[in-house]
Image (cartoon, rainbow, N blue to C red; front, side):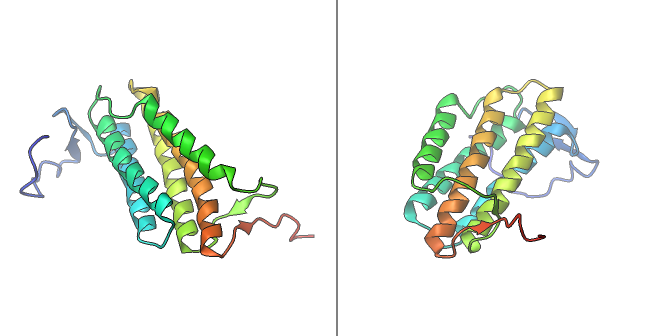
Length: 183
């Protein structure tokens, strides 16, 4: 592991640049910084979600995901680095299938809500979707491993399902979109 930060400010970024994990410098508004910064934001949203009451199995899964998101941020911050692998994506798919199995089929769209944990989960889902869009934008400019995009895509799907699970676990239930409300 590299050096730990003993001093938080360095003033090296005052010119609008930041250092990548490989030592190179790029603009703070670069596509790469946008991608890993949005992954960091998604991780923070999951941290906020973890501050609520939830079933232990969901909590354990979200903590694992936080570590993987940190790994993914590192992969995006260090050009050429690999930290997310096909097995990580397959594990998300397995978890998604497992949690979705106990849910009734969707007949209506779901609105964000259904209790505090579910609402926070939906916020995390939308930030993960934004991280995915930023990663796709980065991939159009630079070579990145496709596992980053695949992981984020599966994670947003998993967070949607977990939002449903958490709404039911809280006793609030899911908030269904009422498409007939204007009639």
